[in-house]
Image (tube, rainbow, N blue to C red; front, top):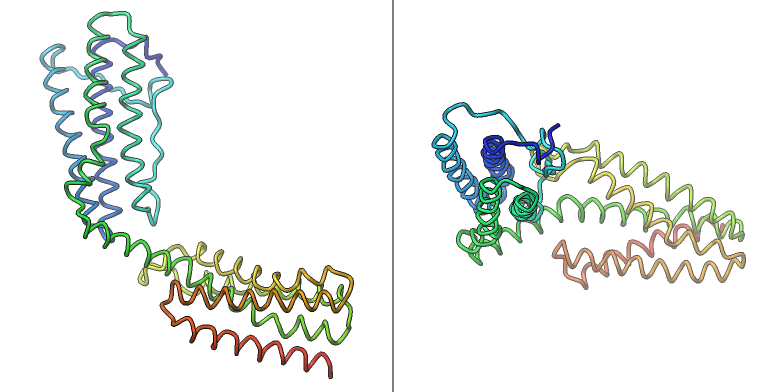
Length: 318
């Protein structure tokens, strides 16, 4: 790798040309990733790509005027200390906000790089060239925001926010809610059956721990293997599986942990309070994200939870 101070003026200009070409391709890649779900924001990145292509054509014309047609091959990877791009454009399920932040960061970093490079340059013409590049980058540092204001209207922004919310519900809330319901309700029977059969806090805790972790593993694998997300758009299967498995384990551990308290009845009373909180939280999530009427959600969840709880107590006490 070469040090920036060792580059000739022709290499600096060739490096700028390569940078503009690479950034243009990055913006096109971001647009391609976003287009299926966010077509209006994809237009923003396509416009930014055209802007970079215009800079490249201008730099090529300047290079040809000063140095002829023999263009050195040099990229940012060949120069020590040059900026590295985080390849978010390769990620599946690219988030809209991530793409916009990446674009703004690229412009800001490039402007800072050229400014610092100009300070280190000793040759007058090289310093002048780098200063001009720095000013050019600074002028369109906020290009992503300005283009967003031009192409992404308030109605379009609201539509894309709704799309993001729908994806969040599909990929995180739904599997997480399924896990929380399973962990909070299905583990009630074995935990309270063990508790009332033994009247021993430690026995109830061990049973609850095993039931919670086992259910978490089972639910997580079931969710991950049920749908690869390609057709349904529900996202990466292992992300959904992790959300479901973790929520399942948390739901069961909530009313298991009180049985670390040695006194059986104190532990049982606290576990009962935790169960009530869990059921209320499930009803709230269903109301908030699944558009289920809160009263209906409360009745369904509480009724189901009480039936499972009563089953566990009845079996354990018999």
